[in-house]
Image (cartoon, rainbow, N blue to C red; front, side):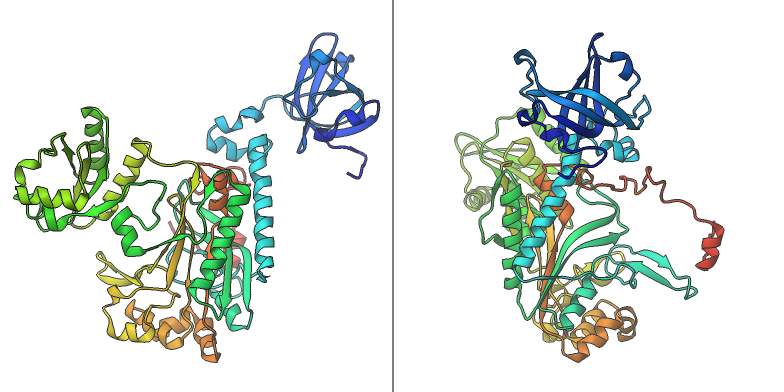
Length: 579
């Protein structure tokens, strides 16, 4: 490193080659030990820790931990009995010649830096600048930088061009709530922060760019979860012209495989990733983001069990999960019943005895033909247990949750794998029972399979979209699609969802006009950067991989936001607060 008035070498880089030399160091006081005739100080910077030593105990008695200091000293070898093999600099120490306090730290800290992760999240985020001094937390952010740099180089290696798109844009009905920005210059009108660069990247394709990408900030006012940030998140946004979904799959697979192979410590699914149609994912896994590390499969037995003389199995959907062998107590089965009840379902189960008969309260409602059909359908053997849920409207969701719970309870999930898959063939529309309307089920800018003909002739709820998600270990890692590039298809698609042409013109004027001037077929996707990092670092909370995240409640105690603004600012933007 190039030296300056504060330091000429990093703390973690001082080794035996410096013995006998004078060095200048700077950093944070990590610890202080006063042994009466000697004082030991460990000094920390981003590169590591080094030990300082001095006999001038009184001179340094008032130095507080976490103060920043600059030190001149001479490097010497430690005596053999004082070598610390747990420190990279454990063979040497620096005898202090002079020490200058650069920034004094008050004596009481809100938490111990080395144990900051044991504090409440609210406290950690309020003092995030202290939390980030923790070596583990700090490393997460350095790791983030390395991963993003690798992703950039990977995309440029495939001839993608990095282009930034606007942050101040127009509001649009894309699903999540917008963050809106009042206009000072145009009274009563608003900008919005982009939920994604969706329209802009499509316009870039119309503009003649071949391959675009950016590490894009996205803004959505949707409730946070452990795997979803509130307010702001980042995605690798990319789009390509004159391509099909297969071209996007190739890029997505390379990015995920290369990133997880280089930075992860688990086995990564080989390319090509397994492809699962949406309907199959819902049937077999009860989710459109299945965790394939879990070997359990859901099967539909409605046709068989609806023949039972059992009223709850009439006019409903019946699905089951077969588990090979379970050595659990009756209280465990009771706990599974209670869990199912807590998520809104009723659980039944059948145990297969040694003589292949059934042990279940449901058995008395079966005849031999039903038992035979069930055994053949599920390939039942002695020791098997069949878990059953019947529900007309939410059977798939309940079974999906039960599958996850059983996988956890029975320790069936292989935690040494990154198991990827591609879920495709999503429905283009879905039915909203509360509003009695047809809505877009996913991205409204995707191309419907079958194009305009499908929109004109098919039942909307049977139309599929050229839409796909990349999934890993039960998390949605990326979403993408082949885009609509036709004005006529755009108008018809929105008409079915209840928007007339004037709404399309007013809400999406850029796309509506641009598609009149020769738009290429184009497609793309957007892997989530924060979620990638969360999985690579094995963090349960996505906020651990973000430098300054908002809290779980959507507030920032460190910055004091959201907060009130001055009356002048309200007047300038033509806003009046109503009670």
